[in-house]
Image 1 (cartoon, rainbow, N blue to C red):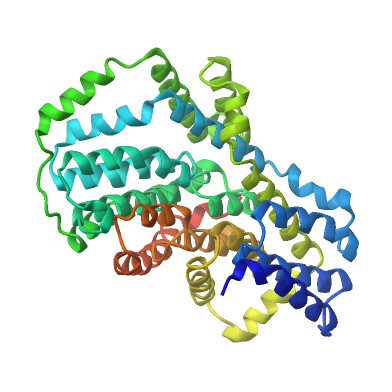
Image 2: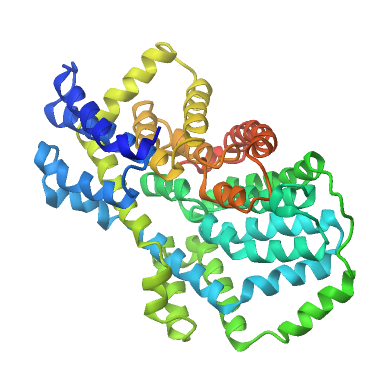
Length: 457
């Protein structure tokens, strides 16, 4: 069945049914907001239209349905998190265009060694480190050509027919590493950005719990994939000589690479010292982005071509819908239903686990960005209703939405990994399912121990 073809009519029918069914305790705008939410969920799940197009529909339907005036609807596009995204995308493009990523990978291989285990370490940690600062799909795309080259250097055979264990581990290491590394910062994944937009947790505070979680997950991914896919090759053909030849061909760091590295380090420094400088993360992202233009590494045509403006458009519409759910009381109404589901006086841990399980299960078949757009506002409302720190539920939910290790439908990086032909779907499932369980348990432990004092804005 082609879900894309039935998505739009199904979404319209379901929305109309919800509009007709009486829902006690809801205002008219809240009732219409729930109908629009159902419409958006079905459109996002089936991908009947591009995510950005669905967001446009959400915008003009709110005043038509009497949910809010267009002036109030458009406020979603004034959310500063959108400027954090724009800045992050431009920084990523600057790093890509400078050629810094290729040099970083070869230098890591040269310093760490040329064994299969060290090669897998480079795959996992290079995307993991990048993904902490740029969008995980961009990080994966940047490193993917280099991973293919490392696989060739190792002399793997018949990799495009999923015959090489080393190639399987390498490609999944890059994909899973990008997802895990993104947990470290607010800008690392789209769900993190969504949580930051609603909770306003300071950038450095997120890193207190996000960075340890990311590092532990990266180590586990490295070791686990090496165990699940024992390498059939042990060493880069030619070893050090091959790498030395590659580095020699690159030559000394170019002026552009040095400037790009300097801008990236300066931007990171500003992000982690916001408590001292008084700058916010949104302004810092734009400072970093502007420097790439000022130093002529990028021109505006690069931004026009390679920044995902559609994702930014989607975010604006999703934030607008989230605001509608909050302002009309629809989110609070849904939260009451969750309370009825888990009992009259559930513990915080039970609620966290319920929300995380919902997030983990649905994110395997739905865009994690779209899912976060639905669950994060509900989680914020739940925390406020319990007089708890605003990030108590939103942060675990955002992280759960990024535990997308099980299927190609779960995340674009997993889809891209599958698309190489290096690995089969059943092998992705075999490698990814245990990592989801480990990630969920680790998240709860870290967030509610070292992270607990930092969940408030």
